[in-house]
Length: 290
Image (cartoon, rainbow, N blue to C red; front, top):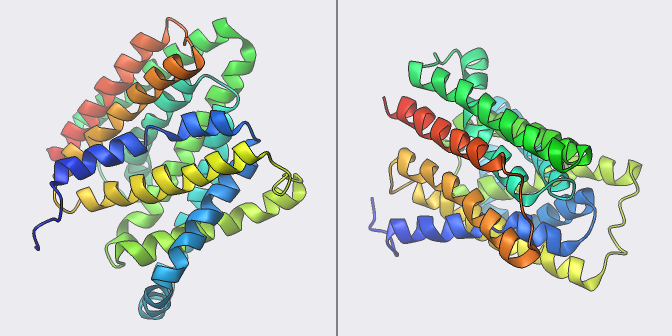
């Protein structure tokens, strides 16, 4: 393996910070979730194609029909994940949306058990129970803030579920495809899958404010292209446990920024719920290590 151009832990730190910002940018955009999700993916894909077109064409010809289907499924699931999660940020607190999305590794373990016949370890089982308890506490706290927040929590959990399907669908095929063509294909499919939603729901794609377009471009550049790319790059040099643990830091940063920028105070039950979710992830990652 060639030595990395920058220290891997620095690359991971960049990824964690970049992936802590989506909820802040979404709130600053002040647009509907569907428009933000679609334009974010469209811009990211459009920026990648000039650099990746040749590799994408070569890769598409090389992979098997089964692998092509998995790429399409993975891209579709990613599009649905972003649609639901971005919308959740507009309906509930940033803290709740950010912490509930980290249930995704737990859901991956459950799906892998049923779909891929990967046996759940004792640690993973404990992690699932703790994650359920943590999510319930967060939801209970948001009911106290207002029942409309519970709808946002539900959307965040559904978005987490689609993210788990995305990871399961793309996990095996990702090993066969280099990073640049893979993310280009995935973002392209994810954007295409949202077009029917935009048409049916009449998303105001061309009539958003200048501020909205600016923050959507920032979403495409920083969390999408920089954050996700650096995260995948770090996996090449660091243990999966170390990289995965980075997602625990993301909602903490997002919650702190939401308090500082928007003076958004989450419910008191978020804190014990978040603690349970974080501990559940440590157990799940320990199960992976074992």
